[in-house]
Image (cartoon, rainbow over all chains, first blue to last red; front, side, top):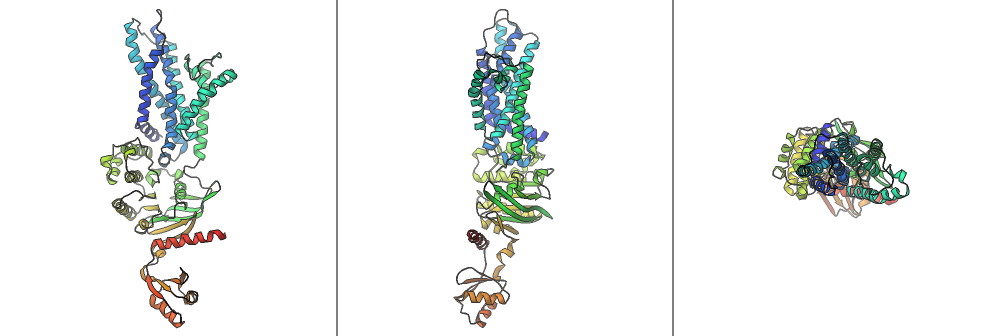
Length: 249
Length: 302
């Protein structure tokens, strides 16, 4: 298993697309700063950090795209046969892909946060705002953000494996999040709270998401995590069943 | 010992029967040519053998196990499939290192196989910039990476230049001499004729020949071509005298395992006029066309 994971990590980081996504995430770090409201007089460093951490989860579309590459890309570039020759156990391959997808999601979040912090902290210091110890809310914000990105990546892995195409997976995700999600939000807000974008919002507690405006607040953090895990799990299960059954021709 | 066993293998894709009750074995220390026209079912058979396709019935096994059950697949079987199997954006070296990691092969083998296939100086280049021949060599490097006992190669010579084909022939010859087993598919008969010990021919997914190469071709002058207006009569006489005769044309017969003198004597003693009597060497191509042609001719009557 370790060998399979290490191989998948090497594969992920030895193509330019991954580095382009990391660079794009880093650039999003600047967007995060630009999008933050100006700090109020009494704002504490920890509160500002929380806003920053929460905002950093906007990399999720990129993370989802990265996830779809992991299996969808194997079909797109016709490398899946070679991959299955060295790792014929398809379940094991999928687990390795999920873990590596989560790691890739964290790498993108980290790139975004590092840029945001390295530019944002000196700017705050210049205004006399000092960053003390992280408070519990800031830590939760950070963890929520990172967890959401890891789960988006896993969802992407599952989607790529089910659709066997990175392009189809990305298109499906975009259509779902930008067309299906807002419609459901309007007509069935209670149901909407159980969709991935709402779970993402509930988990990160960020004011903006794939789903933009809503009158219905998302579920709590823990419930959202559960909903998100269920989605990622369902995608994984579907991927596992289909990968196991399908012929690779 | 049997390295590869295909038994009653049948694979159906929707309404298409790609492989139909196919059985053959590949012994260790031999090179088996796996022949058939494009679309005969060679690739489906090979993919079933490698666990990529689930057979509808029957099985294709390696060392008496399904591929997915092999404890160290890439150290047991080296396989080359039709596509390169490498991401175009990845370097040859990274591609092989990833395969080594996943297959439990020491990383030092990567440079060894790159040397072996002559790609060492291109190791850091991206595969997308490789020529077809270079991709083939990279595929062979991947197949040889785990120092396997068995090689399963789907059309390995396609895209290789003549020098590359010679190199491949030497490589596979050495591999079989060292006790390895090779199953090599091709639709180019000349490649296999110079390489294989044994030949399996399939057509429309069905086995049409499974024999040692010399037996299939008929060795040297043991094949006699005879042309006569009384072909039917001569065929009957020759068959009665115990010869293996095939009618290959309206006036042409081929007699196996007998000398031209023997055939001439039979004709003469029966008063049959001959227009041609010659010792012929059948090429694998002749055999192949005959075998696949026969199967095709049978088709409409089924």
